[in-house]
Length: 473
Ligand SMILES: [Zn+2]
Image (cartoon, rainbow, N blue to C red; front, side):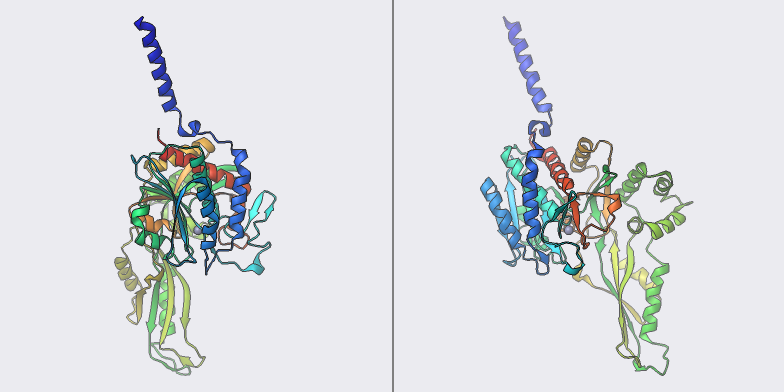
């Protein structure tokens, strides 16, 4: 009589093993088409809240989000440095066996020039499969994806190994002291996490097919710097050798011929390698031979001319953006000044760079002065072999089996910089945009819009990735 019992036990054990083997995504199935109207409602409502920064007024967005989370039974906190600029932090508890995961979007948007817009930037107009509006791409797409993911985790009663923390943060557009800066300084113990998922990545499609999922693992650090030339003031009718305007012009011009040397890191090496696998042969050749001494000069020249984004990630870049000096035609000014937008590689030694720049300028009348007012902290890139990055790759294979996941280094700056500086492995993902759209309809453009379908895919992308990394097995 033991035998049938043993078989029964074996069958039970097998069944248990099968349940365990099934991925979390299979254990918590979602009827996506049923969810779509709710997603669009929340997205449109968020777009209609004008959170142009300045002044931001992000509390208006918090006042929209908080009751939704409260009604769902999800714990929320509102923390703010300025009551008009609140941050919302919602948390679903895990069993504590793993450290928390942050999912994050910023509620403020860049300002608009209304008369340049073909549509009302705060009407959330739906047309031809697109939703238009300031923040549709940057960054209310993340806010709504995080919101929907939290609601689904709660509704499906997902058992979690780690806390999932949703941060709807203020002030990303140039005033992070109200947002991530404040949270990291004043509430770090409440939000400390192993991983964070936020803006910065880009999912790129060609003819409606997703080509690659770009995951930002690092970014260049803004290191604004001024060149200040000093001379003797005098009458414009009498040429002077120490004319500050001339010395400044010479110094600025040096950076059209000299830039810091090329230096790849794990992210940019993998970026070019993987980009090559989905590029036409001539482009693939360039991406594969970027470090080849026989070809690098020519390839860098090509990128500088045709692919400024890909050129920028090769090195710390020095770009003059403002030049000022003088006030009257007939007065030689005693001072002239230029602003350089320096974007440093994550491990750049700025003191050494300034020394190099002084040697290149080679002019004792020109000072090189750091202007740290908009700096963000530098930190090593987040890993491309982490379980988090692997989770992104699995989600990409599930949703876009023909595509590839590519790690990227942003040339711009995001709030992930502050999280990385606290040791968080922080990653950026993003909505789908078609290659053909270029920058025309992207973040900060005056025709900002996203594909409606892209928002739904973003919700799914985040959902599958969060389940993968946070759900109990
Ligand atoms: Zn943004």
